[in-house]
Image (cartoon, rainbow, N blue to C red):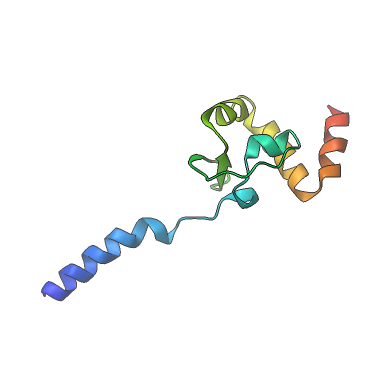
Length: 94
């Protein structure tokens, strides 16, 4: 019985990591990408988007700026991530 208790405790300890998703954009700053800038992060500043995906930011200020218009910034970041030329076309439409 003790074995099962230890096993169960170990499973609970690792459970949070089981569903942990890899961050979008390979962990680059989502705000930076929305502005056409590649900026690697350590993913210490995160946001769980409405699409249940994890987005990283280089600092809390970048996250705060991103969340002022999350839908638009996410659209720009995704466009840039697919191809930098996409962002240029998207900005021209604005």
